[in-house]
Image (cartoon, rainbow, N blue to C red; front, side, top):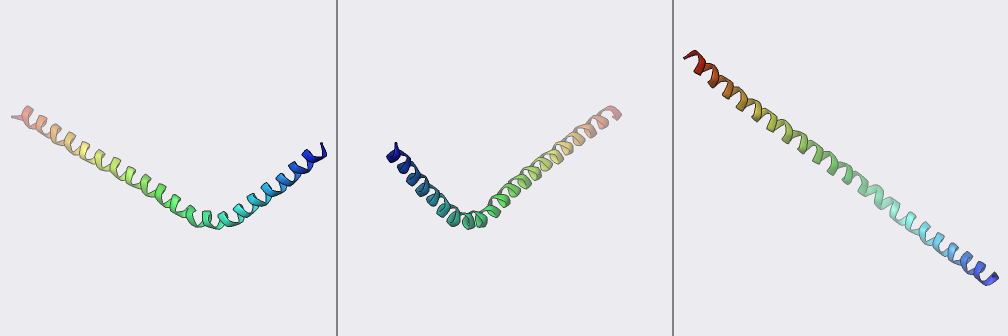
Length: 76
């Protein structure tokens, strides 16, 4: 029982040290990479919004032309 407890204690300390080293090494890298993710998401949302608005404008333009043709047909 003492051997298992000491092994788990040693393993826990080693795992804790590895996680601490990874945190110290990776946290600055992740802080540098985080803005890129935010910029990519913002660009994708902007592109999607611009595309949706463009399609809506084209749809309204077509609708107005059809309505104009109907008005001309009923007047003539």
